[in-house]
Length: 290
Image (tube, rainbow, N blue to C red; front, side):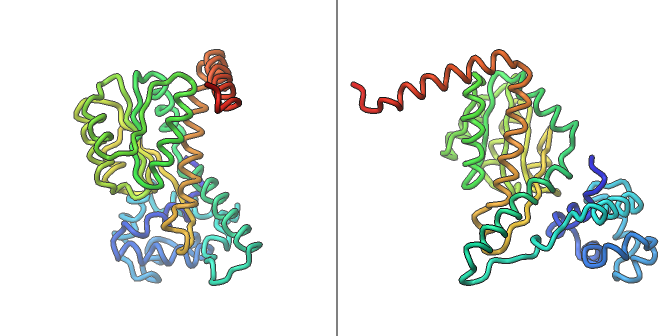
């Protein structure tokens, strides 16, 4: 784990923690420089949260205690981790130059902050599982289905048998045919997409290895995972429904997993990449052949 992800963890958990914990969380987010100098008793008094609530907050965001949280927040401050772009919204009639700057910075920050909360050992285990899998099923809906299809396209090109069915019924049907030699990858930013969760539940019943890619924090999908992976996003209200920043972070994780698997069999990877490139170039160079 990185040691400069305190503010990121708190912000990502705001929607899932209890009100008493949220009081302390908001105080830290609004006064990070002050918070790192406070004792747990002082933070309790200033935020209106009990000391027990602060301890629960630490537990729920995955840090070992209040001192650990303060060290991580201090790391944020030293690296200027959260810039003003986090709270920048797109206005009506926004200039194109501003849109270019804001959206690009939010995408960059989403990837950078995701790297802060990604657990190295989990990524290594996920690569190991994908490399050994007889078959890989990628499940997603809407924007997350685009991620699943991108993953399928990449892994197929290096001769990894995988599916990324767009139809929910096919995802469910495929999930019940998995075995202990296979891997199921559930992709859902919220972690609460019904048919994706049902597909993962089926996969677990068949003893398939389960990898999930969700937003940071507790959610139904990640709680079923053998290997949960998390993303951070800094989307504005206007583009939140399009899942722009979270999509970039999810795609980056797929690229990391793909490259990790590909690098384990470097010569074989190059062979299949060249083979698929040749056949695609040949086919689409002469699209009207025959």
